[in-house]
Image (cartoon, rainbow, N blue to C red; front, side):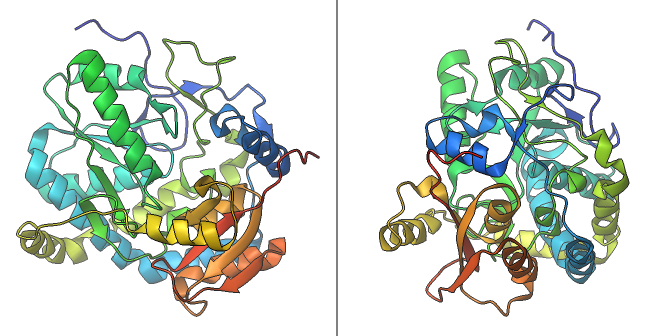
Length: 373
């Protein structure tokens, strides 16, 4: 197999041993635009991957809440990571290659790698690559991984599922890759939380707060969302991303990893026991979240399901980098939505009680077509 020309980018604040980013460094390119301008362009037919949101830097009270939440739920997160990691290692063993989907998947991939190293003494390769809704996976990155590890078994990793758009995109991309290259890739997506019932490889199906969802690049190695813009990305390039060096003082990426990793010795036996039971079960998917989404779409007369983002992680993203319209809330007393209520109040977004919801909450994006600043 011919060696790929691209090399991993030296971007971000993670250790090289934790992850290799197969991304083109676009740090010197001005790609940011306001949430209103981006939303208007996206809703008028532009693609979200062509530009970047301005990185929202939350107030001190919100960052304090992140730390409080992290320490309250560090053991729960560690256990869910352990359950996923045990399943990956039992099925793929030393040949597993962790391929996290940038950027929410990156810290999760690092945690899975760290767990397997602590528990089994094996340091699995871990790459972070781009997948973009409606545009597919970065095939140049897949080619690079396969050239480096011809006998490896790729395991795709993400943070959580919402309504399943990325799971569907991944399956479509893997089918397309097989048709083009005759190589079958495993499209099973490993996640910490799968409230949408989109995968069979998860730590929990509870819709709970994974603390890394609270922040943007400052908990993801200071790496931006991924970019696919033909002005900067050629056909042989990896998809792109930026490294926000100006946020070094706010970066908590490695501290987040270390806090969760520190819990692994306390949960390893429980994780292994849970997986032993789980492997006997017949786990089904079903994409249950789409029923909620269709119902909400009809009730609130929303043009596209793209404007409906169910689950704690996705609702947080709506508030951090889109133009939010309303937040539907099943249980405002849940400890997993405190940060959402705080953000909604800060941004003046209506929170609507909505008890009949499979998820804890759901973010609705405002229709802003043609509205630019």
